[in-house]
Length: 173
Image (cartoon, rainbow, N blue to C red; front, side, top):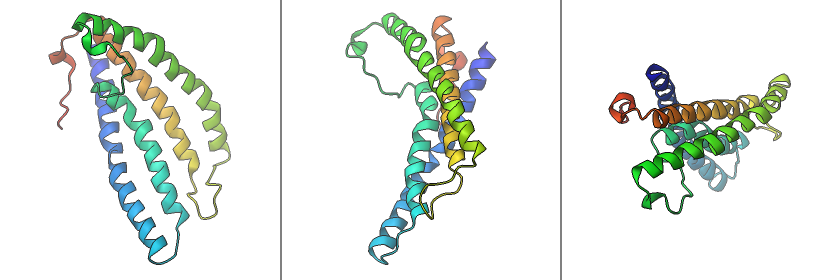
């Protein structure tokens, strides 16, 4: 079980670190887009789409890593007031009744949507846009799977009270 948790978390760490490069790519494309439009009066649709789709990839493919390092958005008003044991139970209940069902529904709904995009080799609806939108849509599946697996790994750690030294992978690398 410990190896399963480590494998899931190593994969999600790699995915999160890799997709973080989207920020640099998006910034460079945005600068190029602004300069080309306002200095040379020439817009490039595909570069504008890279910014938008890079933003989508950053959120979808980085979410599992954020869950892993406990940096996800919390809506709990009283969470910080709870004892560690109460927080553990809030996390277990949240993962079981919210995160895992939502990841499952997203996967269920997205699969035919992504399959249709692959079947048509869907491209951008904009003239001059990116040709392989079906690849972007595939990130929805990757999101649901990686997020769901990370929720399972976190749930296993919490339920079996696995000490942090046994599961925490090096976050600095």
